[in-house]
Length: 351
Length: 85
Image (cartoon, rainbow over all chains, first blue to last red; front, top):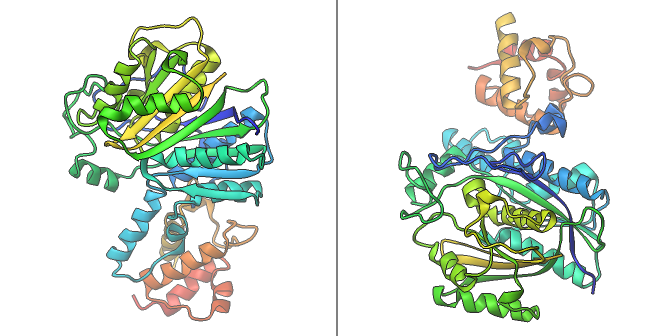
């Protein structure tokens, strides 16, 4: 059974991650939406090529290019992506055109680009890659579902190099709906402290994070992807127990874990899940990241980006620390994420 | 006619999302497809919808499009002769 290594990462986010893992993160507690730090798109594709690309597609191509470049891989055995909302920008455009034009004059571009698998297919078309190409749309475990698929293929010795990514984009219209639904904190209600928040809803954002997974350890390796488990519904009181069970299945106990990466997003209604797990790992260094990445369905891919960099750099950035517990070295990291009390995921990485 | 040509250039840039292209970058005689602006068959569909929506021109024969969309000059001449709005 082949191992699975993370050998390259590319990330487009609300932080300056395109140039590598930031030594310092930009913090803005006064906004309920963290704006993306846009890459120089023209460095990656021509304006003519980008004319049909919504920002999610552009970000996906940039992030996947960076991941492949870092790993030095050009030939892929699979491209697997996860997205919670898909190409919502072009879906919005297409649906708006239907309404505005009384179901007449529908143009093809936004329709073609509105499907959820647009990013994975555009990457494949650009590379001329005819290998396995799949997109998972499973809410907040979309990215983890893509990881599970890749891991199963590595376990079965069917692949050597797989590109896996999580992409989500936001539009002004969807943002307004999310505010109405109480998913995004109200305007002018800041400052928003993600840790220790007393208010409902969260600070949103968008992004694309890609991982080049390979069966061979190289100089660029960040970590080994050991295991992933997704659970749709989980009672609050059982989170700690579930985490221990997950570790036990990997012949580990909580004492073997050097850090936990938690998806705290500042929603007082659901952050209890993270607090519950934090209590279970009270003597373990704890990391959070959604105050710098924002929340979105595939924000957990940013969490894996953080965890992988902690293992590679052997250091937890001060701005990402939940507690002040430290370890002399970091070998095994457990990541836990959920969104609004469902779509729980546990991911284990190791060096 | 010059005003129509300018209008068509602006609409083509907007409809096809040609970032970084200015109306002044498109010459009236430049080929829109192939070596000129580099448009393709999906862009042709967008232009057909543009003619229908903004000028009330319905193209039923795809072969017609090849001649009409040769350049801004040919497009403007066709719109001028056939527009219903």
